Image (tube, rainbow, N blue to C red; front, side):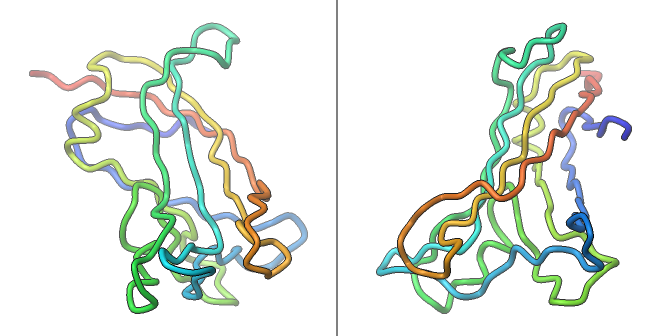
Length: 157
C-alpha cells in the first residue's frame, strides 16, 4: 500500500474502509448505545500515535496523536463519535461494502502543528472494544491494529 500524503497547513480527511478477513461487509464500529453511568462510554474507541520514522526504529519522536471521542454526556449525544474527535466511526450500517468505516481528521490547526519538512511518519491505529462480552465492565480489548504510514508534504510559507 502506498503512503498517505498529508499537506501541512491544509485540512485533510483520510477515509479508511476496513473489511475483516473472510467477511463480506465493512466492520461497523459505530454504536449508538453508550455503556455505563454518566459520563456514558462508547462501545469502541481508537488511538493513533504518529512517530517520526527513523531508519527501522519504531521509537521515533512523537509527531501527532489522534483519538476518538470516548464519552457522551447523555444518550441524545451518542452520535458524537461519528461527528467529532480526530478518529471517527461513521454509521455504515450492517451490510455496507462501499463506504469508509473509519475516518481520520486533520483540521487546519492540526496540520499546521505538523513539522514543516518532508518526512515520513507512521503509527498503529488501535481499535479497542471497551466491552467485548457486551457487559458494562471495562476490559479494553484491542480488536484491530493497523500500521499506517504518512508522508508530510511541506507548506511553502
